[in-house]
Amino acid sequence: MGRAVMVGRGPTGAGVLVLSLLIILTTESCRAQKGDGCGPTVLGPISGTLSSLGYPRTYPNNSVCEWEITVPRGKRIHFRFASLDIEDSDCQVNYLRLYNGIGPERSEIVKYCSLDLKVNEQIESSGNQVTVQFMSGVHHNGQGFYMSYSTTEHSDLITCLDKGTDFPEAEFSKYCPAGCLTSAKEVSGTIPNGYRESSPLCAAAVHAGVVSNSEGGTISVVSSKGIPHYEGTLANNVTSTGGTLSNSLFTFKTNGCYGTLGLESGGVADTQLSASSVWDWRTVTGLHVWGPSGARLKKTGLPWAPSQSDQQQWLQVDLKREKMIAGIITTGSTMREHQYFVSAYRVLYSNNGKQWSAYSEANSIQDKVFQGNVNYLHEVRNNFIPPVEARFVRINPTSWHQRIALKLELLGCQGPAVRWTKTRLFTPSRNSPHPASTKCPPHAGQTTHTPDIRNTTMPPHVGKDLVLIAILVPVLVMLLTALILTAACACHWRNKKKSSEGTFDLPQWDRTDWWKSMKQLLPSRMMEMEDSIRYSTSEVGRLSGRSAVPRLHAEPADSCATIMPDVQ
Image (cartoon, rainbow, N blue to C red; front, side, top):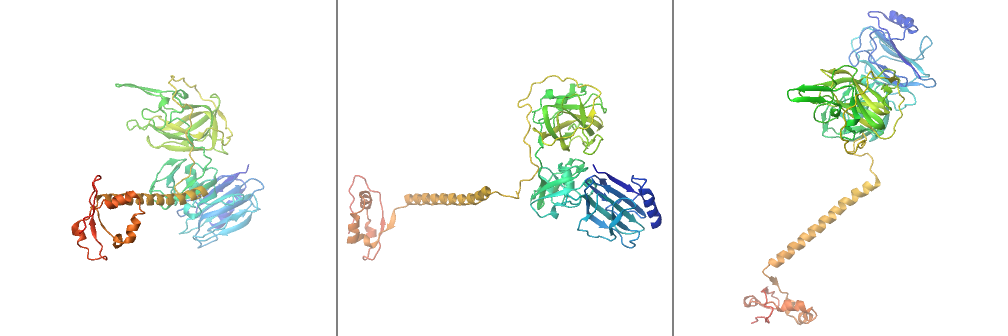
């Protein structure tokens, strides 16, 4: 396992010589951060993020900071700049330097001293150790710098400031460094609907629970058409904002282990919920029990609350068998008249209900304390990266507002997904009480459908079947429309014919010998129809010759009478 160390020194009002001597004298003996030149920084064994103090505001005068980075042996390091803005009035005292190696034997890779410098290429080391040195004298301008690094196998490394709009592809994969929550850029949107295209990719990925801020990792991004409204939520220590319509958005592909595990739906029975204690609150209206059965997300009524609020309280969920647990969503009481909520908590898990492990982040031996709710009403999500495999889960509040009150839902999936190395065991100070039995709801142990965190508004790839459907459906619609119009016209013509007074033209060849011979060939029914016509004397009188076309009025014939033409 590699190590990453940050050192910083910043004597105020000192000259270049004094600053340099302090760096040399303290390099070998001190590996702790000192001075006023080191900004928010996360240095991990595989990737990390560095910045000058005050970024994106102006960095302080007469300061210096130095970072020493070591990755596993046999690997090299490359760097990518998000921003580099160092005043160049005196490059002897205002600069950023990168060195191969650590200590007196180090050798310079590159030195920068310029305002608003665009460094598009990656800077690569020759070994597994690098020293980064930032120095400033008296200056008036410059924001400093903001950069990321990773081992060189992650050739697709991006910076914490890269946005969705920086990549035109419909689908792409990139590597996010650790520490991107040091960026002040705003994230807009949430999962599964998507994030506004102007959001920084890596901070949005942390919010979505795709990567952790402490480790970074690879993200698979899907771009699609924008939506009318973006929802703002708090998740994984990232507060996203709401927003209105945008041209495009992006979401993330995931392993699919994000379904709910049955608290809200009732798949987890009341008998599977227990707590360290329960608050029985007696009022003039009766006894109000704040029991564990009320700790279901979105359930109306009283939440779970312990009899007293201290750090020994816990709420337990028994999933009946081991499942992959990928996250948790919590709210406070959700009751305006009782605005209680848990603002921070630990998560413990077990396979037998006796020996417990406290959740901690990778490469850390400290129990992770999750950020809880900031009010009594709105939901807050925290993801476990990687997931934990367990049957029992306990929530242990560590801080709260007024008193402990909690509703929750667990996220995960049924089968094993990613194996998690358990941390140290934790033994609670008291045993769980046995809650009263309740009737088991239907579909006990049910897990809801696991959603994929990606948007389907505009899929980037369309299969052949979909293309064929897209062609055939409009054609069929047009044919059906044509048939309907044809039928409507025929019906209209038939009705018009029936309502007609029977006036029509008689061609001149009707009285010719040829037409008389043709009548003999017509069907008998048609002949009957022809003979049934009574000619009015007034119309025939209008005939002036063989070239004239008479206008005839058809009158209904008596079926039992012989009708003869009334010819003058």
